[in-house]
Length: 178
Image (cartoon, rainbow, N blue to C red; front, side, top):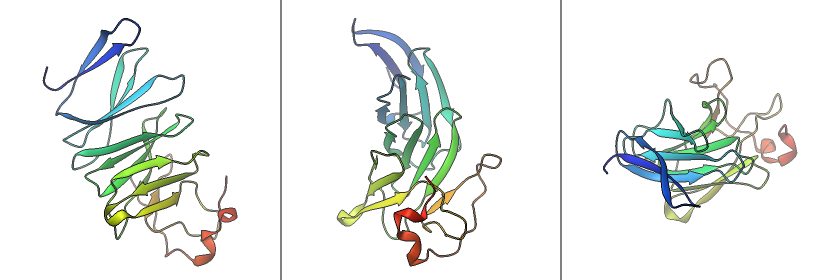
């Protein structure tokens, strides 16, 4: 059935529920935690979180302007990253459905994403065989973040934070709050 996503029971191999999608599904990821959370991305840039136990689906907004090409959950299941059209990655708070950070590389596309074991770093791969890492925690006061990443605060998830260029000293792992 076109533009329909199904949730199946692996025990009985039967559909437990379905969701109407607004365009074809392009990518899917499943949280490895007990929460049973699934996320899927669509060709139109929409990203939807599904709580499989309750069969609830909700869109995340704002999402991407182009097709969602990659998705990944953090190891603890509290964060999720979506990649839209290869141009940006959005890091989401899963429980709140809020945008935490935006990554827009200046000199590469994003084709693949993965969280580190500690969930503090995100690796992304791009065109030309590049692999880069970005720290997902806010830097300590006086240390500027990587200019490729913008963090959002709780009260205003869509306002960009104005940051100066990254000083070389900020690259040391101990310069970041944990």
